[in-house]
Image (cartoon, rainbow over all chains, first blue to last red; front, side, top):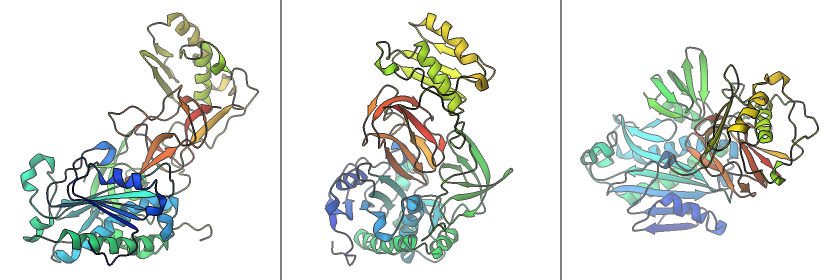
Length: 250
Length: 196
């Protein structure tokens, strides 16, 4: 791959890999290799939230970035907002390939949806031994059909299914890498345009949602996303800002 | 950047305490009474009456409603409020009987924390959800009785799908796990108590 995006110091392309996040976490232990990109042409043991399996069919783009957010001026307290920031960068990369009638939408905090179906998922993990580094894993459904995956990916959709043609995985990856660099710089500079963007693209806004917080479930209407990335939920007892939790229904 | 909040900044303290622990309300501390349990021969037995008393003090100190500990096939479960102390122990019935009075004392009358010269609290560095293990099937990163070092991963705190492995940053022996896996935690909320 020949990237116009020269900010990466390491690029690894593996024909097959258990989990790109695991390999990227390893690279965090070799600071001179960061920032690094790990791409798997086939990922066999992709992970989602809390060990959930990420289903990656043929034709999907699975990769992880190992980065030091401080390089863009992003503070530790801003790390959680990197989920939305990454989702915006994925939307930047795919939107030019989609008709205007199919806007990419961000499902708080870390999924990209188009036409109500999931096009991409994002998983961020920190490396404990090098507390300044973070791994950003992305799974993007590009070519092929998920309809055949049945129950394994009931809500998923690929770019090919949306557009009726196949797309270059390398070109998508390059576009994402360039977009991520720009969006991360916006976050580091506290550019409020970034929050405007994630509010504009928010899938959950104005919907009644139920959020599972583990110990409790809260329901209410999503009234937008805060500048720090929190989900703003109007509940019967007033507005709450949620920083974690799983969207149980929407 | 000064003190003004930056885009993406999470609040450093959330007034909405959904948890039983309340780090903003420290209790008065007195001289240590029984903080050398780790050196005693019976230190490994969670049903040691002194340990039970210590747990009750911990509950009071951190305003915990319940502590539930397991060690092998032994289990101790302390709950404040109207219900009595509950213990399910195969080998330690007499101790259970002795323990009840210690725990049934009203919180206000309980002895103030009898230690803390030797105790270290690991606090949450961020707002988020606390996970005791890497996934629901795996064992917790640490449990009561474990010896940890500065780089030992003690838990994961997740905020907006950013999973942060939290290192202990201190050394010591775990004497209490203060938060249940899957619970929301606030910035600065005590997560673990260690003994130096």
